[in-house]
Every structure is written in C-alpha cells, then in structure tokens.
Image: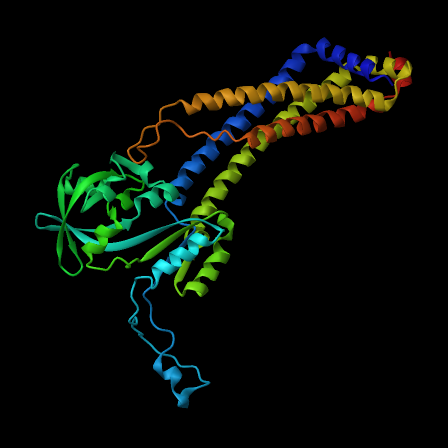
Length: 419
C-alpha cells in the first residue's frame, strides 16, 4: 500500500477532529514539560546538596588512627600460642596521629595515573580565647592551592581571599559561625590556645561558610606551616593526605591497596558517606518515578481519545476496508495518528520544559547557609530531554497500538449492513 496515501488519510482524520487532537497533544506537552522541568530542578537540587558534602570530601583519606595495638605481649608468649586471648580495657598504644614518611607517600601518589590530585592536611584541636571564655575549635592546616583546585575551597570564602592564608604570615580563615561567636572582623587578631596550653595570635584574613552551620561554628583554616608552628612540629608533620581520583568508583578498591602499601589507615568516600548517598539516590528515584507517571497518564489520555475516534469513524474504517485497505493498513493509519500526536506534543513539551527550567533558574534563592547560591539550582542535562522525547513516542505508540488493533479487525460488511 502507498504510504503517502496512508499518511494523507491519517492527516485527514487528525484534522477532522482537531479539537480532540489538540487536547491529546496538550496532554503530552504538559507531561513532557513537567517531566523535564521537574527532573532538572530536582537533580539540580540534589547536586547542590551533594556538593555541600562531596566537594569537601576526598575520595580517599589517608591517616593514622589512634587505636589499641592488636598484637599484645601475651600473643607472643610461647605458653599461650595457638590459644584465643581475651583482654579487656586495652589502652591505645604509642602510635601518633602523624603519617610516617608523608613526603615519599605523596610523591608516589602524584605518580599514580589513577590519582587526579592530592592535598596534604594537618588537623589541630584548639581553644579560641574570647576574654575568659574558651571556645572549642579546630584549625585545619591546608595547602590553599590544592584545596581550591580539588575541593573548591575558594568558592566558600565569603570575605577576603583564600590565597591570603599562604601570603600573610600567622593568618587564619574563620568559619562564619565561629567568627560570629568571637565577634571577629577582617584584620582582627584572635588568640588560640593549643592542647599543651601554649597561646598563639593569628590574624583573621577571611571568612569561610560551607552551608553546614555546625561545621562553620568550629572549623577554621590556616596554612600548613602556620599550624606546624602552632603545634611546634617539624615541616614533615602531616596528619592527613586527601586523595581525589579520576574515577570515584575505584575508591573502595584503592583504599585497601593504599592501606597495605603505605601502612596507614585509609577511608574511601563511599564508606564515609554511605547514608548521604542513599538519600541522594532515593530523591532521584522519586523524581524519575513522578516524571514517568506523568507520561503514562498522558498515554492513557491519548488512548481514550483514539478509542473514541475509532468508534466515531467506524463508517470511514469500513469504507477503507471495503475499497481494498487491509487490516495492517488501518492499523498503520491510527499508529501514525498516535505518533504524530506524540511527536509534536513531545517537541512542544521539550521547548516549554526548557523555558520553565530557565524561568526557575532565574528565581532568587537567598539563604544565609548558602551564600554562594543566588538562584534555584537547575541541571540542564541533555539526557532528560532525550528520555522525555523517547518516552513521549513510546507512550503514544502503545496508546495508539491497542485502538488500532481493534480498528484493524472491523468487519466492513457488518458495519455497512448495520447502517
């Protein structure tokens, strides 16, 4: 059968009931637009929430955990070999929090092709002195350039510049919550007391705001050299080596490898943020479920409209079959009608979905916990538009297939005789 003739007949049927056709197309358009805009907004929000944690978390963290020695003297005694020895209240051994041979370890990591970059870190618990009051806090000694490159440290600086901690001697960047407690401003000098009771003055050169209030109330940042002087430690004293990988999925495997290779404890990002990743997955799953539900509902609307069209066009179907059109030809006509509705409705839905996403992207979103975010987050992932286009065609195809199957089985003799 001539496909041009089939297409011409399908177009005639579409235009003959153009109001029903328009309603069906609007249903597809609305569903696709909501699907695209909803996923763009929800995944953009997920990415924002993920970045609050994941941007500040290394893929692998190398450190020395202070813990009891598993090999106790009784295990080395010949009289008790081959026996299980249960020892209570074992105290931590003489291990230190610093990473031994940190310089050779960092050189080896830099040469590893699987590693994107490394950032050494030094953690020092301190007291910030506010008159007679001591406020518990932590000073993180960092390499500012490495932290900014790998963990976006400079993006969380709300006042001053991140580079000042490496340029200005004995300087510090305070968490915004901690700065509010101390009533400190840029250029002020804060007094810091170490665990050994030594007091050290540090000049405030910036404020840091991560969006996690409890974190910002205790955390502060200084250069590695400043913290080493604060603790009276040599230049080789490092407590953490943060590793970013080219492929984050390799983190659990490489963490075990580095732990055995370098003799240090290793924690991968999947272990450190297992609950957080589960929450992110559930939010994304809900977004996809709602979007797909909208498409299925639109498909049922098209199915009902095509069903009604078939009942109203029984005379036309009977004439077509009486003049030589086969059941397959009739089926093709109604599937073409359904796909036409899906194509044009889906195309319009993609356009409106993008425009709606762009509008949401311009809506002001100001919150004290996220100072760097000015508008609602939107993720313009082309995958969402591809999924929307494919689902619009698949949904409308099946919505047209069932009615067209019924139309192809119409007996023209019975219809004409009934008339």
